Image (cartoon, rainbow, N blue to C red; front, side, top):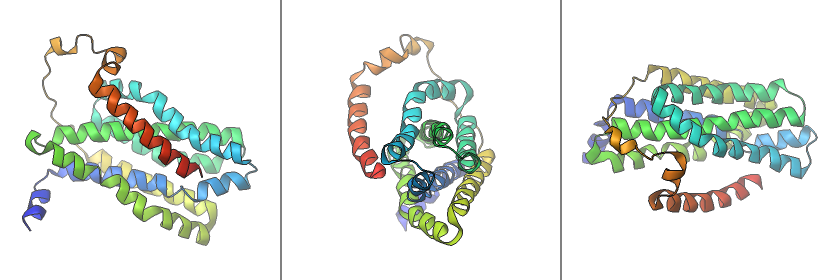
Length: 233
């Protein structure tokens, strides 16, 4: 009971952001099983299926440095709303196109949802959780992603079996739209004051050379390589 009270003590903005993350990833993982089958039925060979699936991660990777700057300039909430909007639009885009190159372009656009969503979500959580509970808060917030991964791939398969690919894509868009509506309710978190002197030399290359940055980045890349292989398979 004590732990439950601790969790309930988190601000409403924390739980709203949690829901946005959970539903956004639910929209994404709903497509994990049906989407490669959809590509196959569109005439894609195994290599093309892998390229289209991998394009999602490529655009997410390339856009992250820009997204980080955008979040610092425009704020966490607007970028989180943008992410949810991309999660909403992209499944409809898959329905609107009818060729592999067109699907590749939509997939590249869809990948922006991850770079914008995860970065804005983590920084927002760091802002709204009190510093003494920040580690616990970030750990709890991270549950939103595997929770969606547990629940929604089987649901995607069930929807596909009952309503076909159109039903899956519409369901993904609907879930993304709900996430966007919740994100619109979020208020701008208080920003911590930063000494301008601390920002000197904080360009991309200077930050990337720091050991606390590149070591975890390499570890994360190695983990993602295994995950990507499983998803592509």
